[in-house]
Amino acid sequence: MKAMRPVVLLIIAVVAAVIGWLATTTTNRFNMPTPVLPVSALVTMGVIAGLTLFMGVRVLRWRNGKKKNMLNPILAARTLILAQACAYAGTLLLGWHAGISLDLLRVGGLRGGEGILWNALLMGGGGVVMVVVGLVVERFCRIPPEDFEGGSAGPETRRGETKGEGEYAYRGD
Image 1 (cartoon, rainbow, N blue to C red):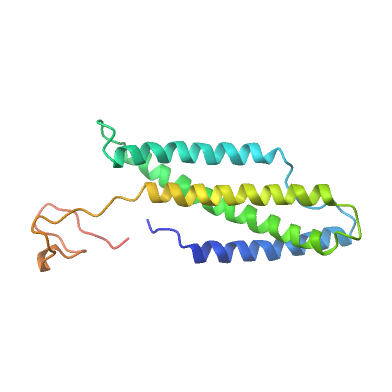
Image 2 (spheres, rainbow, N blue to C red):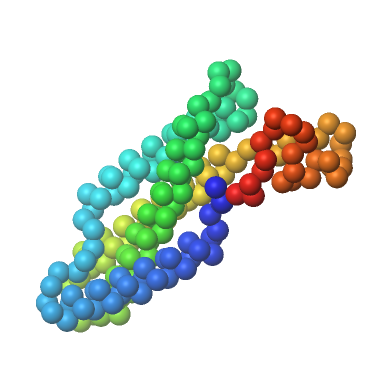
């Protein structure tokens, strides 16, 4: 799997902010409620971030050699996927609620929506926590490069080539 790139996360957040802002202006124009998540969603976001961090610490402890038994590779892959999903979901939530907050700040003096504004800011903060936890746990799942026996990488140890019969070929993922 490829590592997440912060530029892609930033683009997703900006697009979600624009869509959130448009949704807020549209719903306000038709006297509908503001499309913001309730504060109880912070509990769900906290559980997801906590579970991701817990699984990531297990992988980190194994990677650092503090565990004697072998780590299940499926568990490690699931942890990496959960970390990336957590970061992407946090990015979407952050962008959406940032767009809502911008609209509420723009028209804040015209109506009394301070409760909704604080709600949107809390949800955006929860999104930031999810993004940070996802990026940190993804970092936990990286395997450090192996040392070469000779101290330098010769032409026979290039990445993408096999040394001999019976070894796995590198696909370039």
